[in-house]
Image 1 (cartoon, rainbow, N blue to C red):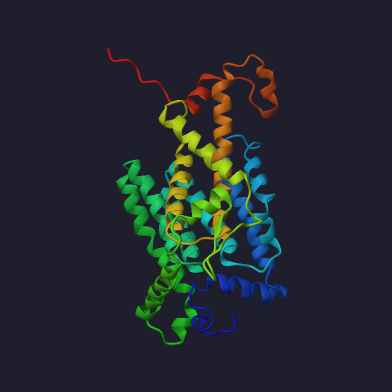
Image 2 (cartoon, rainbow, N blue to C red):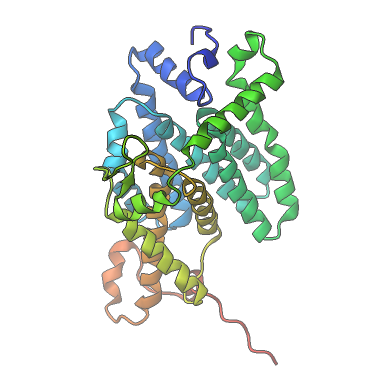
Length: 336
């Protein structure tokens, strides 16, 4: 914020996250105020995503409330800020804007917003995460055979690069060329290659709270922020996926976007050592998918229950044919 070339301060990550922390110090004389505000923005963005996936506005609050009540999130409100919590609202809003484009005729507008926020993602932390996010969105469009939309989305990605380059404004003023600034990204990639150890340790930590450390004698420890709800949510989502394959439930377009993102990001985290601070955009969305599974499974099996009045408290008084079509795979008409 004082005009110093950011690469003279930190070289292992892009500088936008540091600028946000510096702005907090400048405005509030502390490091935590603006990052704490961004944590609240993350909850708002998560609720927006949840409202798209879970149609009931009251039930959509449940996975957000669960995430907000856990130590993984709470500790980020008062501890020294890290890049991952600062990055989280931009990831969630990128997904939200893309999800809004699915049913919109003005999808180019939503693609522009998506690319700008992906630009913020890659300007805060290592760009591979942003590449995984962009890859998940493109994969969705390709699976839906929307080649034209995929091409238009890719055409907006220079906006992401523009946000990244803008974060190096002081570096350009210091006389660095575009080639040298892009070379910094290559250095960041080489630096993070050292993290490509202990492959698949991500799953050990996520499922069993076995944290494979990467210093000293490489001991296996535990993390106090871990929650049993993490593996429970994963197995619920796997169960949901199995019922979709079995054609008992159907997956919505929004849920498919989230699943593809979780799959792409999990692949990235699986190649090296990891930490629970990287799990923020994983756990928060797992809870939404798990909650959606419970609601859809309940609606599906509700037709076998006689005491349907018990569901009125959730705003569900009966299972109509449109509702059943929402949670189950439509049966194909027999051939004549």
